[in-house]
Image (cartoon, rainbow, N blue to C red; front, side):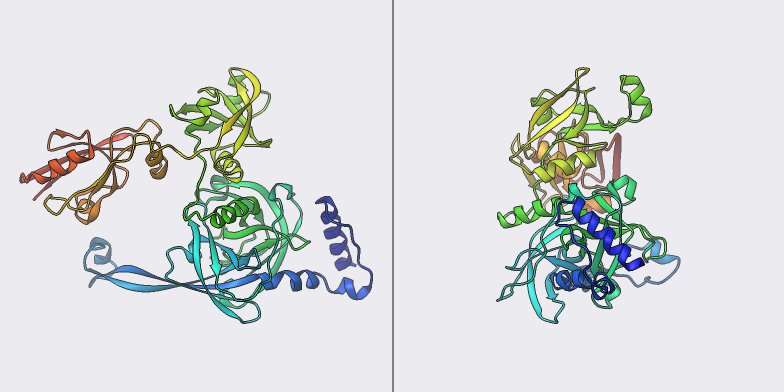
Length: 460
């Protein structure tokens, strides 16, 4: 009776999602549980073995409980091969596979093993660390099994789902559960960034990049991470929604090697109870815009500081991660309908989804061997670089893109805005090369780091 109830519930959910209603026709069919569904979907979920070469510093103090922390940067760097194990999902018969960036990112050798034991090589077409997604192309000579994508906005809390992957490298495994929550952003999920579907289907190391499917075998998300204290599943897992996966595949097939995320050029804060009361709103929700870049498409559309963004393309947003997710799903070059409170009145505006402009043109200089800090790469700031480095919208000046080996030892960091070197004001990237060619015994570098002004001093 219990299994029959599960099947009946799953078929009811399928009907709610617009699928054809179907009920078990025999006791034998009831006893199969999810077996027919797994038999159809599992061949499209693959195991991924990736190798990457990393530089590891070999310190003679390694393993010493005291000195290893004092001499972390001591010793020479040697290349070391790291192996990673994860899962992936075939999304087209010509071998397009989606997985996590942390499984295949920076890999030099990728092998994909199908459920039937066949093995193929693959290359990364598009990978993005921030979204933890990667699109790969398999070198398979024949058509392959694949999963279809479902509109993840149609997923509801309480739906039955299956997670398919390769946990702990034991082989392909299937676990079942329900959708526990939707619109889990980085802060709620404890993972720093992103926008996720939450599930209680057991997900363990090795499941990363695997499939989260509904009762009709359609992909609703790519399993990516868990909340855990022990390293194993505690019933709180997260999957990247299928709608974002679809945009990744679209850009990869278009030839993009880097994921293009629409630029808002705006900062804001979630509208909580106190802010809602102060604004005269009947409930909390939305994003209160606090600042806009002068080139922001939101500003062009008429949005001003103090306005509240409530929806993007009809979907409610409560924080910046949700808003960027909705814009990313729509894609660069499209438009988004933004609903909110503008000038104190409810309304909608249409925003062009664009990349941050490279205006003024980027001027990059890497300091030469003739300087006291060779290998420091600096550029003049523009909206594109501000977005890349996560700097404040009002940031101006010359920014450090890479500190170089000696610059790191001197205390420079990527994202530092150079103000002065040895009392010489820095106005252009070329000024950095000129200032660092001078060789006084004492060197002073003034930088803006976040909201602080920091002075770095060292002797040659």
